[in-house]
Length: 386
Image (cartoon, rainbow, N blue to C red; front, side, top):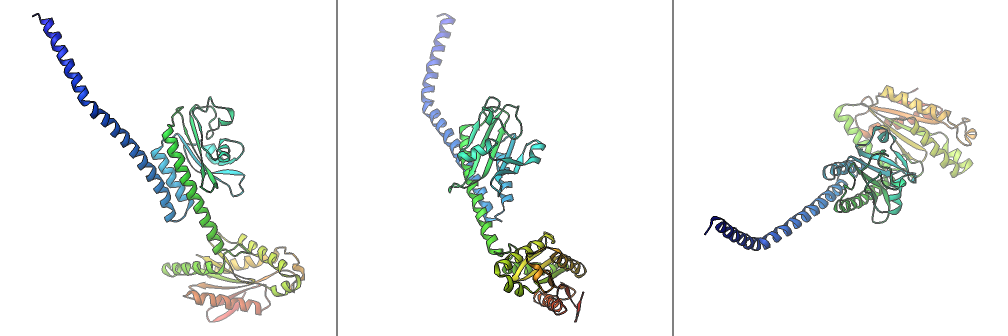
């Protein structure tokens, strides 16, 4: 038998052995493919639940929108790589979207940060209540050529509305990749679910803050109410005592307010209270706490302000009210609307919260007894007047 014939026979045997091995391995290969599919599906489900859990967990922390948006940005950046990302929320006015979180945007676009709802694809996604996917913005219809400020590059763009189950829309998430057709159907589906989850969380946070604001805000004047002041005062007093930091307290009363109410009625009286609260707020720092203490009386807490500077603040507030134009103020006994103020400070006058309020109230009583429209200052064992 020649060598070539022997080689062919050996080749035939090897092929038959390979076929038999292939057939024997077929079930195992099929099983491996199924396991790979199952593994991929499991990984996708795990990623979905993990991201949704991380977003939900922000509710149990501080109910802080910025904290939630920071978590979402980090999750998107890690799990859905994109060249540009932006999250925009609907403004309180409802007429525009405001940029709240982003990466990869051109500086000019990031600094602009405000977009009319009816001028871009963002608004279109919100109106539809459905995501909009543009495989390649360069070849898309004109109304879809907007992708975070770049109108000329090619690439894939995805806009997802943040809509809660009750239909309330909070804003949109936008993702852009420079490579066309780069968002898979599975990615889009997962991002759609995440956007829905985020919409629910943002709606919950909004309701929480609205409810909290109602609980701590005076309904008429929109400044803090007495209950909230008491809580803040306790905390600020403890902080001042612990770190030996100054803290001043002003009690303020609108002069002859009962006469004004009796003469013009409660509607005009309410208008004066609202304007007075607004005037006071405009002349205070953001760190200061202004609250309606009751009736026509307000209280102002000045953290990190010592007595000398507290006196300057009190006088500034007195002048601001005196110089403001209030309706029907000319009928008041002093010919205009005025206020009397009492000042006390930690640690100069008192070591505790109750004494500080008492001494500020004593200063207010002194100011009113000396003719009103002035600042009364409690000092040591004596009561003096500015």
